[in-house]
Image: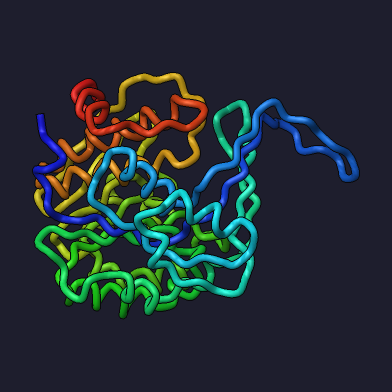
Length: 317
């Protein structure tokens, strides 16, 4: 069994860390002026970077969450969930970013979000929270691409600088609020050559590439990357796949009872990149990603695996 001490590299997760208010289950939006009482609610830290960092903390993986923070009543509460990272966060005079997530009986969800502190996060903030030179195997994952508005405009110089510092780079863009269009695709195409690993779900892969089929889309995106990694596609109940220079590799997911799919992709990222930190092959990385995501979506309240659970669950995937 692989031990935590086998890895000396660090995974840095940069992007949107915010407060999540999760409620459900709702299948029909209420009429204006009325009130609906829902049976489930949970207040928890969230955001793509936040979910990934929480999974890494549970597994006791060497990591740091890189973010900004606001200065309202929720700021200290949010920072308290990331005690090894929050001391380095840049503070801005603004409200804390907040997302209300509403779950539906078909396991889909809807989100309502404000802007808050995450739109203030800059490339300078990220670089200031990173070492001037990466250790061998260090990875930087950029999350919440389209929500971190100021950071998004600087992705090209940021990724260039990260690679100059010796980091392995990974990006999980998420879905653009303005939807996919030619302008968004053109902007991303400029920085894809400086990205090693692209971590997307099926819809994002098809939206970014415009190809008709998933294999064509993932293959085309992989060809635009640096060549040192690949395009990883998270496929939910169908598992995940990776398209890279040497070909394609796919791994199925075991059947689980789905309770809450929010953050599933972020949890997958934690497992997948943790395997890379431990110099595991792509097949193992896919299995670790699926293992973490499978546990997360089948628990309520939300529970992340510890290191021992990860090893056992990954063997079952």
